[in-house]
Image 1 (cartoon, one colour):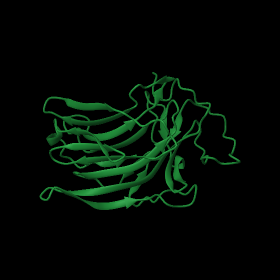
Image 2 (cartoon, rainbow, N blue to C red):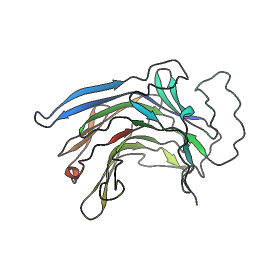
Image 3 (cartoon, rainbow, N blue to C red):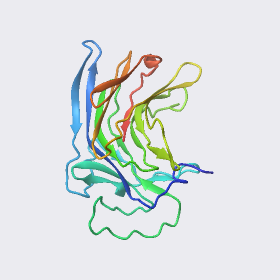
Image 4 (cartoon, rainbow, N blue to C red):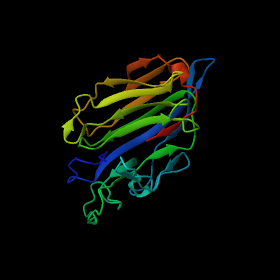
Length: 246
């Protein structure tokens, strides 16, 4: 069975996604105000593991029959004071711009090694913001998302929201590479509310700021401080605490 990791050109690997910082804000349902909860700046020496007080780094997660990606903790580290996720065909850490990178072993499988972070905290409403940049290469995908992970999370308790960027897949450029989404159970089935947005892709070397405001009545999505979407349909069914995923 084919899946993510098949069909794209991996000769330019490793690839990298960089998260400069993450902020979380509480939402006061009485005053309708957001107040800063915490900020993670991902500081440290190049190659250091991140501060795991706020995030759990998945290790040896995957692949499944239809997904070639495997999350390993060696591919999540600090580089130039940004949290860096490495994407490669081998599990060896290779820092960006290393003048003398190690020669990785020849891959023995079609697995793509990458990394995922999950917040220790869960959040019910609030504002969530990050600064991120990534390479414009086929096969990379950026996620800034939240999930409920309890019982029936795939059906009657489906609760999720996020922002996503995938420049191209299998050698074909996406005309709409950037989208926002939230998912919920409407009493009969899971609804997935997706809207495609404009991405400032002229300079991929620059960090972009993504933000989501989640309240009991609306979700607002922001790109570089500008409001790009306000959603209300089904938002009242998003009422379960969620983890942040990077």
